[in-house]
Image 1 (tube, helix red, strand yellow):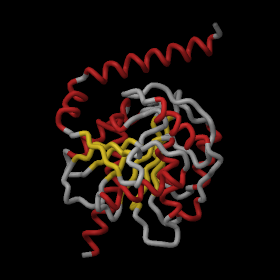
Image 2 (cartoon, one colour; image 1 turned 90 degrees about the vertical axis):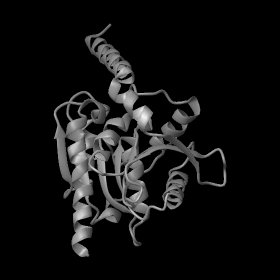
Image 3 (spheres, rainbow, N blue to C red; image 1 turned 90 degrees about the horizontal axis):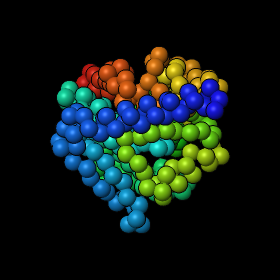
Image 4 (cartoon, rainbow, N blue to C red; image 1 turned 135 degrees about the horizontal axis):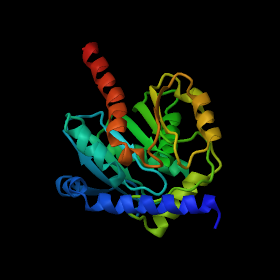
Amino acid sequence: MSSANSASTASAAAAAAASCGILRSEEYLGFRSAVAHRRVVVDDDDSLEWSMYDAGPRHVRCPLVCLPPCSGTAEVFFRQVLYLTSFGFRVIALDYPVVWSLGDWCLSFQRLLDHLSLARVHIFGASLGGFLAQKFAEQEHGRARRVASLVLCNSFVETSIFQQTNSVKSLSQQQLASRLTLNCQDDYVEPHKLQGLPVTLIDVFDDNALTSRVREETYKCYPDAKRAHLKSGGNFPYLSRASEVNLHLQTPVTSAAATAASAH
């Protein structure tokens, strides 16, 4: 076995061990007991089901919505949910319905926001979740925006095939197939349609699925974005470096709330 393969195997084993430890932690078990897991159908097809953890004050109509990576679930954001709701934020962590096109995903997400009576949202998207967030914001070009800000973590602006490893909970075969289909469709973000939208880019510089080329392409699309560089954290910094990620998530939500307050 080559040294590269040995390192990859060791990294995967370490990630799996860390995931098992998280599942048994008091913090995670406390999250599962305190925050209800809801399922919502918003489309004509009853099989298209969103599932979510919606925590924090319900009167907040511009919450933070968390979109997971290709192989992750809503639960990977449990540390963001626990921390941010303790400061009075509303946080909604989502799992996607099984859809097979980006257009269908965006339409279903729009219907979900309508169902939840959310006029605007901040979106934290990880990897595939970040790409989907950009595509949803892109389609709002030329009309009133429902996306107040974007925070993109280890994300990309054009589709490419790359691996994701180890999440808190495994996905069904159909869920994973749906996400891989969305991840690998030939598509790209049109950044000129997102001009004026506050964007934060969170990147990790140790072993993760993104190549430097993908990272640089994202920087080019958002030259004015706030950049948050983490020296380590892998594919799931919101789990491994949660305190740092949480601070970067607080900033756009707090800034938007302050701007809205001053307007009144």
